[in-house]
Image (cartoon, rainbow, N blue to C red; front, side):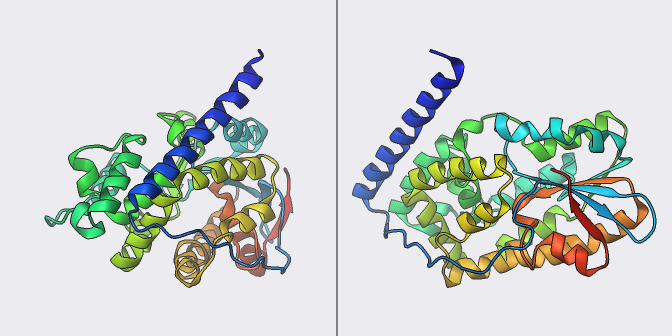
Length: 308
């Protein structure tokens, strides 16, 4: 059996186990409700495909923008090889947030309750028990599971469990930039990113957590679909997948998590592009659409061209 075939078989087995465990949690009933698919949105997507883009100001040298996924899957990591020439030429590396030691400490502190509250009391016994078991597969157990905030548990469980200690693409690029002596610039602070979730009502955070816990196997399987779309450079498919279970609460979250941040990131990218020779890496879902970073930069007068 070839290595590729063994990996495909292993993936099927993992997904089957995840789906089985989802059914078993449903029997314990932490308040699960069925997933409801949103009606497809028919509008075309601006900049529907492409991961690497050239950004050229009215005067000066171009910069490059790479859409990433915040995971270390080997297929995702291969984009580093594609973008290597543009990365090597850049004098400055830019990412969503520069996670130095201080930033990592700040993020760790923000994810957990510091006021005596506990997730068991906030989410209720049944949902907490289900969440605790899910978090164990992501390396969070015991007192940590009980002190994590609902939004942090939600974001953790929204990532692939099997990624283990693999360095996400963004951080691998940051490490390479530091090793090459490039300037490293963060577009946002940890506090700004945390504020996106802290601004969501705690009751809504609990419902987001309930959904990802109850349908964990489904969402883990759909992460594989998102990786497929990413590898295919299909940004329109990523948008469609992000909107698959849209509702009023999720639309409000997307407004904060995606569109408001697109505006902020585009405004902060612009002066860096004016300086030239920057290599910028942000999540691929921030790129497409009329309210995406690429369209916002075009509206500011920059020429945007797909490279890959």
